Image (cartoon, rainbow over all chains, first blue to last red; front, side, top):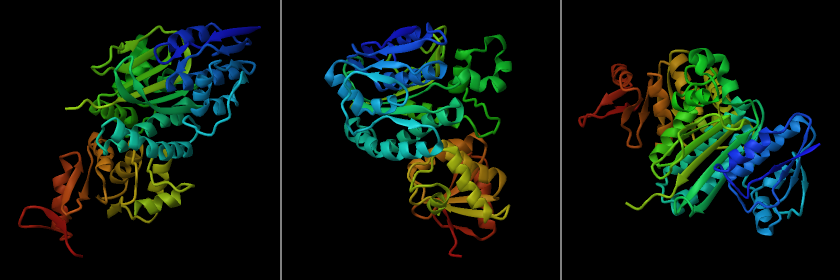
Amino acid sequence: MTRLIEVPTQFDDRSFDQFAASYAQAVDGERLLFDAHAAEWASPYGLVGLLAAGEAAARKGERPLLTAPANPDVVSYWARAGFFREAADLFEVHGKVPKVKVAVESEVRAAEDVHAVVSTIQQRASAILSSELGLDPKATMGFAMALSESCQNIVEHAGTGGWVAVQAYNWRRKLARRVVVIAVADAGVGFRHSLEPTQAKRFGERWGDAAALEAALIQGVSRFRDPGRGQGLAGIRRYLARWEGKVAIRSGSARIAIVPRWDDDVPLRDGLPAFPGSQVLLIIPEQEAK
Amino acid sequence: MVQAVLQQSVSGFYTDLVTRPTGRAVRENIERDLPPGTIAVMDFTGVGCLDYSCADEIVAKLVRDKVKMLLLRGLTDAHREAIEPVLAGAGLAVLCERPDGALEGLGASEPAPALLDELVERRLAARNPGGSIRLTAA
């Protein structure tokens, strides 16, 4: 039995719940077919989220199928982003996929991968951040810190590997400004499971995905009892607050966001369709001229 | 030089001090040659990105568990931004030497003046007529 899971035509953090709802209906033993043939656009969040879904599906049953986008421009963009390089290990890919060399997405499994990501992406990002987004050149190091800490969440908490993608684009629809986006996704244990041994008792009946996200992002708690832990997400929050950026984390059936004034996202949502692991979104917008 | 220790501690050539495992490896390398309770100097020249995890794993843990006083030099603004909240959150402080040679506290505001006073008392630093404190030639 094969279950069809449609990839939204505009696949980003907003349409992710629609994708997750379809994914959540799958039962163990079913083979999944992720159908992206009609995809017109995917954000870095959508692409790394799709990889996480592929990994989770492969773990549960037969290797999932993936239909590549039919639009040659779209499939070419996904290829240039490094999506198919990573997808080849997870899915049985159908459709015409061009062979290209450029890779934006990176797999993160160990601390060495974080070094490689920071080193590679930081160089390319610093030019974009200062020249295109108008950030103070000093902000580029903060960007590297945010990138590093986001990736480390995978290594230290997911219990499995994950992916990071960084991209700059003109966000006409929402902001009419350029943005740099960092998206990190894994199909690991998620925040609730990771924090449960140390935090569940404290929250009592309130404990769940939403409480776990609140504990991690707002209260800066960590699953480790070591006194210096929990610095990463707090540092990311400080960095984004300074540059009017946004952070959103989805894990299990909840999603939390620190919402800047240019956005109308909901700060905390619970009861969403369950999805494995954690998906982190960081957005740094072009600075408005003062 | 922290960068030299970094090269010994991780495979591949990286200038960034990122991730806890890297920080732990660098700190353990540093600790090996460091008697407890000493006044240690760390030079960050050549270090690219320093993230919060590494700042905690190296700087905060050395101050908390190993050294009597830590003096940092070669810090960029970005390094300071990573170290400052980590130390402040733990109620710890270090001294850092600015490019002009003046010493100042970094981290929690309370312990820093005592660190400066101790350096002066030990004649490792002296107060200048302008009020700034600098290391003595020795």
